[in-house]
Amino acid sequence: MTALKNDRFLRALLKQPVDVTPVWMMRQAGRYLPEYRASRAQAGDFMSLCMNPEFACEVTLQPLDRYPQLDAAILFSDILTIPDAMGQGLYFETGEGPRFKKVVSTLADIEALPIPDPHKDLGYVMDAVSTIRRELNGRVPLIGFSGSPWTLATYMVEGGSSKDFRKTKAMLYDNPQAMHLLLDKLAQSVTAYLNGQIQAGAQAVQIFDTWGGNLSAAAYQEFSLAYMKKIVSGLIREHDGRKVPVILFTKNGGLWLESIADAGADALGLDWTCDIGNARARVGDKVALQGNMDPTVLYAKPEAIRTEVGRILASYGKGSGHVFNLGHGITPEVDPEHAGAFLRAVHELSAQYHE
Ligand SMILES: Cc1c2[nH]c(c1CCC(=O)O)Cc1[nH]c(c(CCC(=O)O)c1C)Cc1[nH]c(c(CCC(=O)O)c1C)Cc1[nH]c(c(C)c1CCC(=O)O)C2
Image (tube, rainbow, N blue to C red):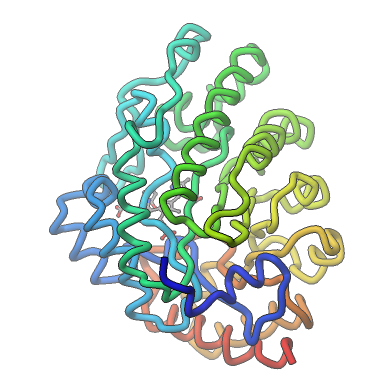
């Protein structure tokens, strides 16, 4: 494999010295980019982009070609590939988000779910990873990812997106054994899937627990964090002579950072509701931090974006262990020029913290 030309993202995740703070953006390949919208129109729809390794590679590289400041690439795919491979029949209704043809409601439904074989049932994702690695040619590291068991379970039980997670939470409290069986099957599936991505060339992996922060403190520990811990303990942590850092991102998990830091991962993703300097003091040397600018700051003018970047960098303070990112995905309405101003500001303003 080609040597990495820019490894500051991997170094920061392992708290090794860097020259400037590395940066990437959640959903960096997405609808705010006209070139993404053109590729999607050409492919037909979103899932066709994901399922065709050449298209997935093309859109993964689009933000990197536009913004030379990006320090990492992220696989273009979706967290819902796993439930789809379990036979749930994923589809996207335009403007409506994800939907499933089958919904998981009973213990019998859960017992019948297979654990997907990443190479057979999700081979298109493995092919996308190896294609992207080849085309990146060492430019920056490639991030692989998966959803957390709890977050995937919400989509499977609700049949799509939800505001209140009514069915999923009713199952959790009425039938905890059934919920545990579902989460256990998902944890096994995610472990195999992420290990497949690592073997195919992913150089770091992130687990997106988008809806963990919607649980009670006690339920979070038992129904989300416990399963992420299980996954982390089953992951390949070194590949091709390099450590493969693991990032856990629980959106709205700010109250529980100490326990998330104990889960065995290398880094925690932070949304914008916590102060990153305070988070650093709370987790100490256990983990690096990734985040955490409010993505809506990108609607403001470049000067205001720069001020906010400066504030977050100052809050984190000196030394390595910070990967700059948004606290959640970049939205379709953002002006690509503003994203560029954000990325430039991170590199320009962070050098002083790494002298
Ligand atoms: C919850 C979740 C999903 N998918 C994902 C999450 C976890 C992260 C988060 O909290 O956002 C993860 C995801 N989805 C996508 C990526 C690609 C990589 C990247 O650039 O960050 C990643 C990492 C592409 C995508 N996934 C989706 C799009 C938009 C689809 C399109 O082009 O129409 C993209 C670029 C669709 C998707 N996929 C999902 C939803 C709810 C939606 C619809 C909402 C929306 O439209 O933004 C499920």
